[in-house]
Length: 386
Image 1: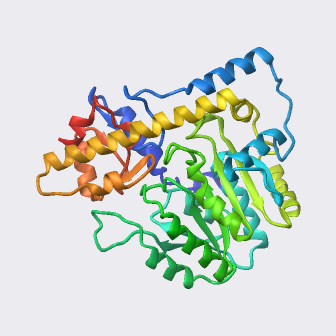
Image 2: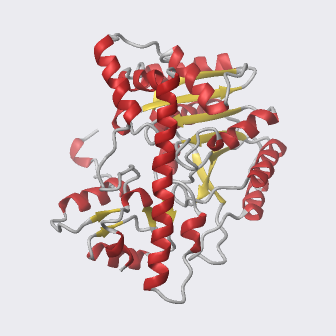
């Protein structure tokens, strides 16, 4: 290998956009790109329950010893309870480096033991999904997710998705986002989830649930686990990759879990541990200690759920005001999709050229037109809709 022969890698779109925003000298600049919650004044939020948990940990000093390769057992038990509503038999887990790390573990395992290298993501999907699959030696493909008849009003296309699934080779992996779909904010209804679950079983697909926003979509962790509950009830084997970045505000702590639902879960987990050991050895401790403290204390857990409701409520309120402002500024247009979508993001339907125009006015969003609604507040709404 010759170091000078190594070409530069293109910048990640989200982080490149954030860099542009940070370099913009305008005092009126607005960031609607990065998927991180901001309060009504546009500031990062430390949840009250998280703050108290950190204070408790500071007082009790749990130490800095290595965790086992699979992570903290109590954290994983509480994570399973949050994900499934109970700690069901036949489910075993590995702590991971947030949801991204969990997906990486599953991709590496599938690259070794899958009957095919095919892995399918929604079109569109989170920008890192396909890159991670390629890095693991897999062959990423896509399935229909949005109804393309009116690109300005994105809506779920169940018929198109089921047709795409029919064309997948048996044994392929399908990655499904559990709730608060990124980047569209468009989620299947309960009956649509039933159809998707049934088709996965019919086709013999390997299901990997990407559960990055539980509690952040509806404001209720219980309601947001609908898809996991349906797959669990179906008797199918599947993975769930959980992140605690968004719902606990622990973006920089990289807290996650990979749950394996299978009669052979113990052997599967042993192989996931092998991937973990040769990649990062064992998971970080502080973030999982925080989550464990909150979920394991009845009062703190209730306060955390209440805070999730407050955050989701603020996002719903800003959706309504964004829609009203756009329809007022652009008479004769309908922006009903902004309020029908759910979670942190809105797929606005703006074209890349329209996004560039917004950027010239120091309003930053991804070129796909994806907006982080959490970045909108009463202080910047008028500039955005104007």
